[in-house]
Length: 322
Ligand code: PMV
Image 1: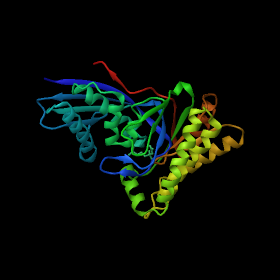
Image 2 (image 1 turned 90 degrees about the vertical axis):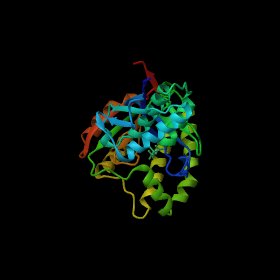
Image 3 (image 1 turned 180 degrees about the vertical axis):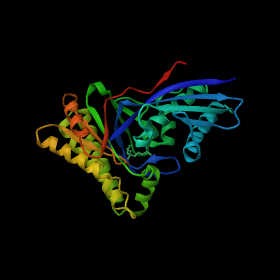
Image 4 (image 1 turned 30 degrees about the vertical axis):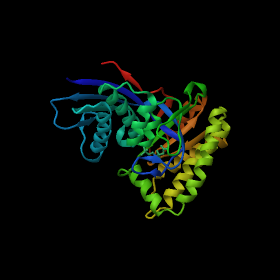
């Protein structure tokens, strides 16, 4: 019997970052993190368990995928098969409505959508925490994409938890996509390298939970003036630990610094906006909806910025009826 399900999950950007694993085998994070799920960055994934297939197949935007990305998908499918008592192999088709090559956290929405679709296709009726735990085992940031709005993932936690809906604290995110060179180091490799070579990693482990606390309290208090500086601090602390690795992990491109400088200039002129960045050269800017358009136009004019995506907070992941 063929079994099919389809699901949608949105990407998320951490306001309080995690970097490093407490348990690499179980993929548990070393520090707590808190993110905003983005409406404009979305993955749709369908899973078909089919007795006629000899092996799992995975396509991303119509292109067959093999190697390490396929192995990560197979691992998640194996966990679902074990839980559901299913033996059939699956055909997984995934589509991002944003540029995957730009490295915009596609693994977060990708593994969240896959966990949603695979569990439903296998006949399980999973809760969101159960889907979040499954997604987290594949990619820790994916645990957070199961929920909309503001979402926390505690250190060593199995699954993420909702902090509040996006509508409770309406902020927007601008994603300044920078022209970049070859693909940067994958996050899992970069974390391992930082943990084993950076003398600043221990300082990061000590500081990150405090910054997370600041970010969380600011979100709970809907206090943008307190949130913004903590968000910038979290990202720069994380990048300081990477810069001090040997060899250094440098995700900054010239345009990355130009965007950060423009955001600071925007603040000096009385505006309110704060940047963050992940394991790639793009800059994400947290801004109030009333100022988003003006800043979007300013960032789009900068040399080395190829496009600016604008997004409000996104919803929980959901199943789509075939
Ligand atoms: O869980 P991963 O492999 O997607 O790594 C995410 C790492 C950062 O994006 C840099 C930080 C974060 O908390 O999302």
